[in-house]
Length: 235
Image 1 (cartoon, rainbow, N blue to C red):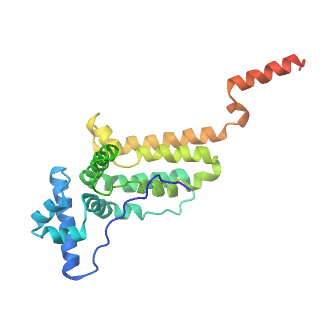
Image 2: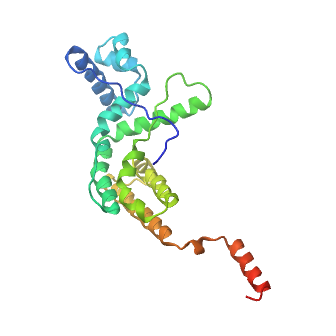
Image 3: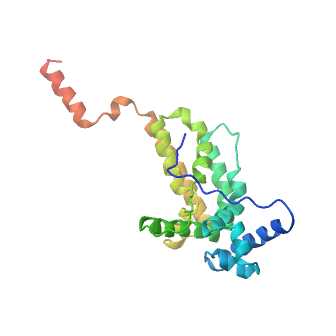
């Protein structure tokens, strides 16, 4: 079972009905629009002003930028987080996951980039002792990928499985878009193809590693010492 260093941020619970539910939705939609239009992460006060809602009311629903961004990402990726597959083939499950969810990443790219931006900004403030709000903690991909590679688990040791899990978490999410679009200038479709290619390569590497015999993993120094001992015995 994968373990995270920090507890994940959970979105505020929306009111069920009435004016409160409508106000919550208005603030959330406004924040999503601001991010989509400008890539800018609005403060709660900014979202309130644009929604023509009082600050006091807005802060009752979203007490911080972290809470607001958590709600934005939950609204953007809710269906992704609920995906489940009964496919017994681990590679096929990973393919299903990437093919079904990367279009969603493309649709909400601005919101996902904003969330990553906030996380990086807060990381620096937290290290400097200047963070004044609860930090936004990402990591839902850990559980999602754990489900995807579950059929592969019996084929490899826990160490190899964990390494595959860690590696896939690097290529699944908004990060491939940031690197491949911003640095390489690739289009969305090529980002998806490259990410899936990397996932396949990581699965292949993990399976090759799992097939290796323990004897082939011994350090060269240890094998050399054993050979010297056998030679001394005449073996």
